[in-house]
Each structure stands twice: as C-alpha cells, then as structure tokens.
Length: 497
Length: 94
Image (cartoon, rainbow over all chains, first blue to last red; front, side, top):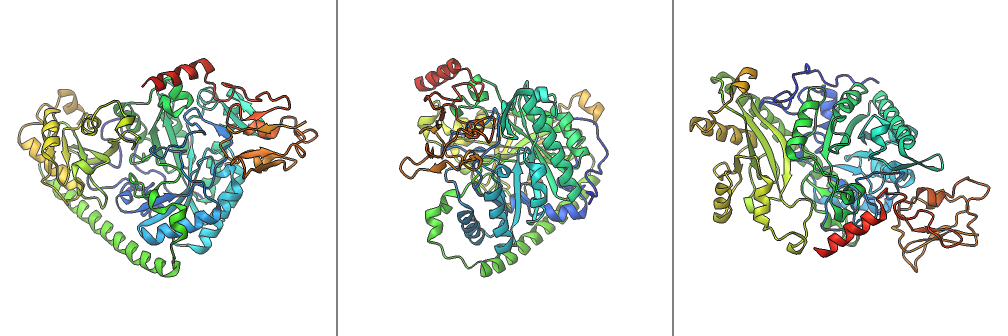
C-alpha cells in the first residue's frame, strides 16, 4: 500500500514561519491525510497536540545491540539520569506484559507501548516479538511501536506487520558512509564485527531498505536524527529530503547529549552538542521539506507517563507483583476516558480554529517575534507553578500566530542532588535555561524567582492560569505589542514579512 | 582452549544466542554471563571469528585462552586510553 499523503503543504521558503505547525488555526498534523491522522492523534510521540493529553511507556526488554554509536555507552546506568539507552531494570517479556497492563490500568491516558532498548529491539527479536505478540492479544487497546537503528529492519518487517504495530521509528543520522564512520565505529553483521566506512555503508543501506519496505506496507515511519555539530549538522537537511521521499511521515531532529561523565566517545572527546538556536535553525530549514517534530523529550528506554514526566518508580517489578489487575474492566474504563479526551481535544481544536479566524480579521501586527516559556503539566493549559516545573515549553508568538518551538529542561538531564552540580542554584539554572525568552507564563510564581526573572529580562506572568496555552501566549503578545515593546521590527523582517 | 567472560560484563545478552556451542550461561554466583570452558570451542569449525568477542560492546570483558583481552581498551569505542584516563581524572577532581 502506498502512503497517501506525506506532505501536501507547498515547500515554503526556508526559515522563519515556514512550517504548517505555524499559526493558531492548525496543529502540527493538519496537513496529514485523515487515515494517518486517525492513527497518530492519540500518540504522544507523533502528535504535538496529543502529547499534552496522552501518555506513553517503554518496556526495557531488549538489552542486546548490534552496533556501536559514539553517543552511547552500554556501561552506564544511573537512576538520576534521563536519556535514551538508560534503564534501571531489565524485564522479561512476561514482566513487561504485566507492567504494561498495570500501567494501563493505573494511568488510563497511557495509549502507547514502545520498545526502545536499552539495546536495539530488533537485535533481540525473540524478547521483543514475544512481548508484542502477548500484548496484541491481551491488551488490544494499546498501540504498539518500536524504535530501531535499522540494521536488522529488513528481515523484521514481515514479523512487525503481524502484530498491531503501525508505528516504527528508525534512527538515521546520515546517508553518507564517510559521515557514518564518524558516528558508528562498528556494526555486527553476518557474524563479523565490521568497522569504519564499510560498516557504516551496510548500516545505511539496511536503514534505507527497511524504510522503503515499511512504507510499502503502510506502516508509519518516523525518522529520528541526532544533530552532531561538525559531523552531520550540515548533512541532515539532505537526510530529511531523502527520508521524506521514501515515505517517512515525520522527522525528529534531536540534540546530541554528550557529557564526559557518560563515558561516551563524544562525551570523553569533548564533542559539543548543538545550542538551542542551532537546533531550531536546523529544524526550520528541514521543515520546508518535511513535517518536523519538536516536542521529543529523548526519554529513557524505561520511561512511563506523559512526555517530560517519568513515573517509572511507581511501577517497579516488586510493586507490580502485588497489584491485582482486572484488564477487562480497566479496558472499559480506559475507553470512556479516551473518548472524553478525544472530545476535549476536538472542541479545543475547533475553538482554536475560531480564534484564529477572528485573529485573521484583526489588522495584522507588524511586530517582531517573541519567545515565551510555558509551565504546564498537560491538557494544553497553563497549570503549573513556576517552581515545580521540570521543563518549560517554548512557544513563538509573531504576527502570523503562535507555534510550538521546543521544550527546555530545567535540570539538564540530571535529577541528582546538589552535590552533582557545580554549585549553581536550581533557580539560577532554571533561569539560565530560559535564555532568549521574554516572558514566562505559569499558574503561580514565588517572590524570589519573580525578582530574579525580571533582573534577567524575562517577564513573569501568572495571570493566565488554566487558560489554553496558545490563547494566553497570543494575549500576552498583544499586550506587549500594545505597550510598544515590540516595535523594533527591523526593515529586513518587514521586507520578508 | 576456551574464552572467558569476566566481571566487567554488563549482561547485555548480545553474545548468548550467538554461541554455536551453547557455552554461555548466566551465572547465579557472579551475577553476569560466563563461558563454560568444557563447552567453548572458540567457534572453531563454525565461524572464522569468535562470535561472543565480535559482538561484545565492552572492552576487556572477554579474554582469550591466554587471559589476554580480545578487545583491548580503545579498540571498540575509539577513545584513546590516555584520553579516557585524563577525562576520568578530571571528573574525579571535581
């Protein structure tokens, strides 16, 4: 089957407001066909809209890997750390099924079960497929997905298509073996360890072949790419074009995470990750060609909960063993809750369209764009206390509307205590993470952070508690415009507006 | 002649299904994978390269019959051992 529509939006000029996620009238999936849309609209990892409402979980059943990446270290397991490839507890398929059903019963908004490691799921076919087989039979209301480096993908496509799996993520960092050799030191292929360009070439061929085979079967493919400055940053726009042409429906460019204490090649060798600006610039330059994902949280291979939160501690195996789960009745409850959420999402979407229509009738502002940070715990509204936020969502407001840009973690990948850090207070670190933003919208904020934010040139705002994010951002933007704070739109910006 | 898995093994399971002699087992005693020396053939007659040592991601975790690491430091990660030592010393100092 051919994927009907991948991207109908005309290729806009690069940069600026070039993506379909732009504007308040549309969401990130607005351009997709109804068929794809219905598949992803309750998937938090694929739909920016859905990630405010629905939760996901990963089960760590797949420890083995068939390649080495320079951003990964298989020795590392710190419970304070949150990044891909890290897990605390390896599960058997039987434990994974129990855990999934326990989470589904206790967090009814959990719609998606993914297998993402800590190794490569397809390098552990027995454990991975046993888990999928049982879940598709015993918990048919859960969407299943898998992410892979792609090396074993072509041989797995047939099996994948049997198990209710309609989403696959392939990590593709390059299409050029010379670049690949700088990212992948070796692969294990046909009973040999193959190093350098030769290994990278095989990996790339397998990834591309697997992508084509999945697209031909109508399985949705998201491509993840790690942005590594000086290695593949200039190359990823080409990767984006190629994977889109081959049928991927979403591209997720993520920043490299590299710290010496992780013991990875890039961490130890001092390879830096991209800055927020570099990442956003690359995402913008790819978005003319491709639907870009900007809300990824690069979660652990055993994460549980809404994106950006991890409730894994509530569901350790010793706790699960003592839970009695009646899945049939849980499934009925889940159905009611899912329908209520879907209704809420639809009515919010309709309200957004209406708002945007009235916004379009107003005289167009001629003001510069502004970044704002939002504290939210979900449901698409401003409902979190500044001091409780572990991350902020970053939105851009401009005369063209409001669009989601990225998220910023306040604790920079580590939830450890003060002894881990370099002495900077949590508050100072949080404020530093908001660099570039001119306002922060939250439900409440204390006196001390208020003062420090103002000193840092960021306006704190607690007046829009419980309001929908986009509406509140636009309201604050208009207030700023009315107060004459946004008049310095440069002539250059006017010319391209 | 037999290979040996030592305590730096991280239990990633990659080697276990590859062994043509089914010599690799999880040791309750040590908590990591080990090789039964009576069963290990060093893949003689089955594969050109020893399979466990060809997929193992951990440098130094598998020793040859003479007790020498098949994948010495730096050989898999590409991190020069002296750079690794330097980085670890820097981290310790903090």
